[in-house]
Length: 294
Image 1 (cartoon, one colour):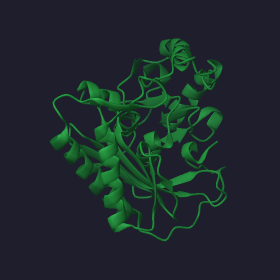
Image 2: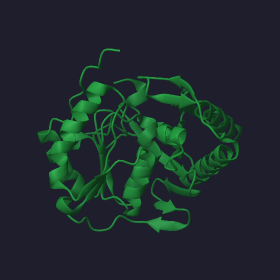
Image 3: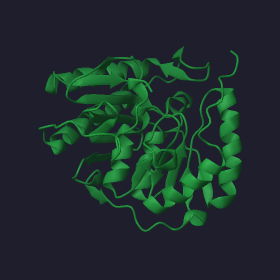
């Protein structure tokens, strides 16, 4: 798997590189730049948002704001931490340092394009494991642009929504769990995800498809969703939100108790994730169909 899509490291992923830094200071910087980016988006969003480019398919869009905000975040981070690496979704920048900042300037771009208020800025900072097998996230922030709320976490220091500590409560059991998910852009992958959903839906309370994985993960940490599963996420989609779930007492995994990756990300309380994992394996959710002809 490429550098751009490796999952967060877990106990089996190899030793974590030693990092001598205050994780809460990293979190403060993540919050600062995420909130500044959100303010910029609110001030400068035009009356009509236009598509600037497309990526994997014609429906996988990039706006000028995505690019502008990523550039701003990179500059703000480098002012404070010039030796750190940077990995941005839109620019393709992937410089490496002892620490690397992993940024999604607008998670939920389609919502932003259509004027739906569910989109966020996601900023995380992590360290590559010493054997190059995965990442450990050290701090992260997700800023809900329209609601002006920020979730954040520092490794070993808990998860927070602004000044309120977050702790995932006792799981309700999968049959009573409200579960978030999302769908890819490629038609063949979407068809496969729909078939998986048919297997999942009868075994849970209900499904929610909000359009921002970063916000979904924060809702898991806050108790507004009981779990999330999604195929096709990039590291930038779940780096900050995944740490927030973990610091709230949850787990973030891939299929069969593996590391999260583009194949699958599952998040929630441990027992809920285990039960959902079994259903997803039975539904062959880890299959990645060949891309549809363009």
